[in-house]
Amino acid sequence: MRCWVRDHGGERTSASPLLCSGCSILSGCWAAVEPLLVIPGEAVEAPGEPGERGGRPRTAEWCPPHRTDREVDVMTDKLTVSVLGTGIMGAAMARNLARAGHSVRAWNRSRDKAEPLAADGAHIAGTPAEAVEGADVVLTMLYDGPAALDVMRQASPALRAGTSWIQSTTAGLDGVGQLAEFAREKGLAFYDAPVLGTRQPAEAGQLLVLAAGPVDGRDTVTPVFDAVGARTVWTGEDGAAGSATRLKLVANSWVIAATSATGETLALAKALGVEPRSFFDAIAGGPLDMGYLHAKSALILEDRLSPAAFAVATAGKDARLIVEAGEQHGVRLDVAAASAERFERAAAQGHADEDMAAAYFASFDEGSGESTTR
Image (cartoon, rainbow, N blue to C red; front, side, top):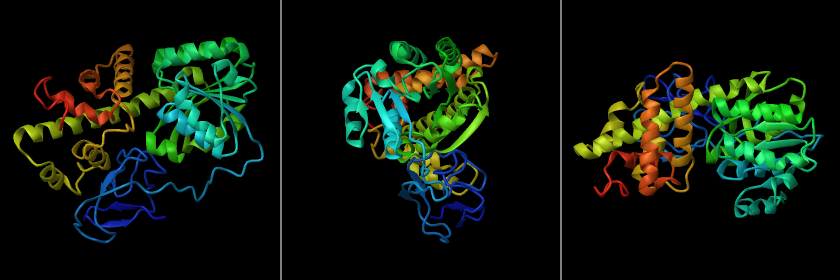
């Protein structure tokens, strides 16, 4: 499988030094020679065939999942993994764990979201406590920190001291501290392990895992990370310090800023009677061009906002966590704050469950006719 980048002359060349978006969060197929953020799994606008100079853009999915150097390992040890929270991300992670040969015990507050996992061999539990019975590893992928703490408290009677807890919820700085304290009280090995990526990379097992936690015990959690992700970046040895969560907030601040900029640019183009293609042509091949812009623009322009890769409501929650983190450390984050307001407005207009790109509609006043239709 070869990936392609566009060199400064506008020609696509084999990308041997740059990994495609399925392998690296900070580079992308045909992105630019300078690494740019292309979320693994997002659809992008790609140039013509390799070697064409100035080929017209065409819509293309990212490179199909490829794990040539690391197929989900031929493992000798199979784990019992409890997955608490089977929404967009959690369900995909649970499915990949089952496919890797692990025994999966899944729970979700709305049981109907967990039931389809039975076809992959997962045991569907009626309660969090039932889900964690006999688990070697507990993985939480819930809406926010308070939700994760509430569910773990429900699971508490069946938790065994020494069990590894992979906490993948984007919980924020305060949240991760509270969760780590609960882990300490219960004698759990706590791993702060949020992920980068959305629906498609989650389904393909191509997430980027950001992890912090004790070295002793990593042999237990590494097979889980290998089943759900393309790569794991270790940020520290103390999950309670929240170094992985801090990196996740920094990365998400860029994603949210890029999403907001995309929406506002398209909204302004519409208001001024400028064809979006004229804008794309103007920046094509230069440092301002990026795959993520094309990916999110396509969702808006082609009315493909459902199913969401990452929902408006969840993006709004993350934007607020980013603003709070900045405030706690004396940094004013105006773009993140404005983005949080945009997501809130879009949700109020009925776009809460659509892809975060639907924040585009927040640029138009309610009743203008543009707040619900492109």
